[in-house]
Image (cartoon, rainbow, N blue to C red; front, side, top):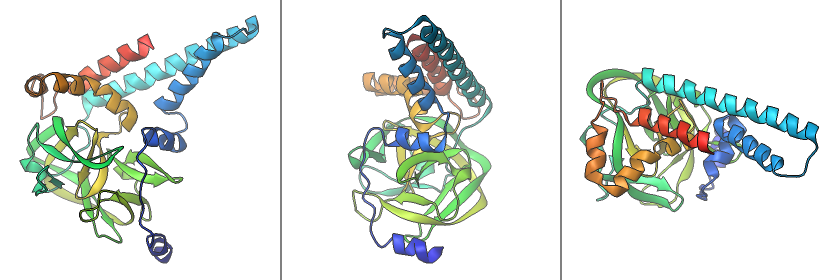
Length: 287
């Protein structure tokens, strides 16, 4: 198994950053996620605009109501989890690279600072617009994911989303689902493109501090590993959509975004996610 992985890694992976890369890959992992339900609902609406028989129309309208109910149920489930869970995080010792190229520990990261992220243009820097979670003194279990070739070590909570390769495409999955041999994406040296690296080991550690920064892109490189800023109550795509409110306010006024981030904060968990969920429901009702 390891020999096969080493052979695959002789050719560096040069990922092509396309806007639909996560959505396409997610469909191959979760046969009924929000993206696929939304796409089927769109198809139903398109068919209802066509010249069809009464029976076909009745069947499609019935299916449409079923889809709308399932989407609503999934969003309500997400709301309950958001309200009851702390969200995926990194420990204080996790590292990021700031806009000046300095490697720093997560506990030093401040709102508004730019960090290295992944966008459709590759590795770049984007600002931190809020924190889903920030508790310096809390001790927590983390998964420690170690890679084979480049010896990257990522410490991350089990519910945090990390990008792996599934069926030749990127997919954001909870860290608890990462297995030995899975391919993750890592930054090597000063390269602007990511490379694939196989997971060599997964273990559990206990560390201090829990931090979940959210960047403008919704992604972040932590210990040089490509991760999402979100956790698994929603897919990466839908969670990023839900956080559109935070991005809109940040574009309007970074100072206002920082102020709003502190509103409703409880146990290091700001109210952005609850607001994002309400906006998601509103968006879904109007679509």
